[in-house]
Image (tube, rainbow, N blue to C red; front, side):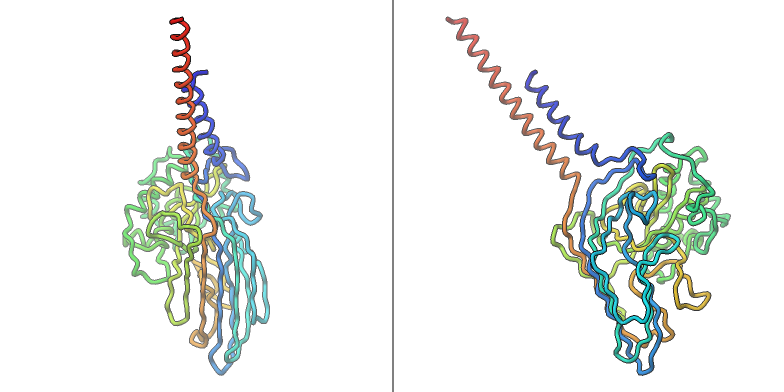
Length: 406
């Protein structure tokens, strides 16, 4: 075999093997057509101290979200790509009167619930440690033949599509007209999502001055502005109008300045306190469901992300209208669940708290880096083989010339 053919086959053998191993084309647990481009493994440590400061005692009710485990073989998620592989190493809660550990809600979010009657200077503490691997998941070219059939009687539709809700008004005539204007009836769900994400990203102007309470899809559409909540609510509602189940994801966006992977050993120190200071970057984004493909996560503020999510988003909750124990009717459900523990109490001036989250980068795995290394190795190997082949050919020519001369 000629040397250049050997080099070519070597490169072909080395390069695609790694790439193919990261692409899931066949539906496994209802998820397919995705690839993991890169991964970052983090250690997350949470330390929360809560102290009652009044002379008279007070009752407190806590519901604290855990980081979710989001992957195809997770017992708590369904039809979900490996966005967040979570292992809880340590969970300690002190100072409570009663405790329920690992409570699941209807969206399969996980919580710890506890309450306590505290007197002056009595405290509650919460300490957790996780290992969390976040994967950059990107879905490939999805054809009509790859997509299954929606079962509109499925629980997914009851939770995330069929019903009009506060902030997700699928009966709003302006939103219905807008959604139908954006897409074509012949579009498949991914094409609809692409167009809706593009439209929401272009239509809304980001406004970071809005109050913490979300405003909803109708408000965002009428006012043409919003923060991450409004971007997400508008995209979700426009998708649901087209019969595509969609839901809000909330948690922490670790890094927004750039997409550079943080180096191993880098530490992010996040904190919040009752004094009002915080640098904990809460965030909201979107997932929409396509049968036989799974839940696709995206960032509605970035048009090109309609089928891709990065390695900087820690998920705490999916869904909306979460039950809040201890709260009076009318206030016992929250549209977005707080990412910092927030008690239900009569007097919110009767306590102080300090919340600290330390996130350490343990490992990073960039498939792009692996591909570049393989290309370099293959190129070097090819160059060596070609060089050897040329040297052998040159020697043969010299030997033949010598034999002819003699």
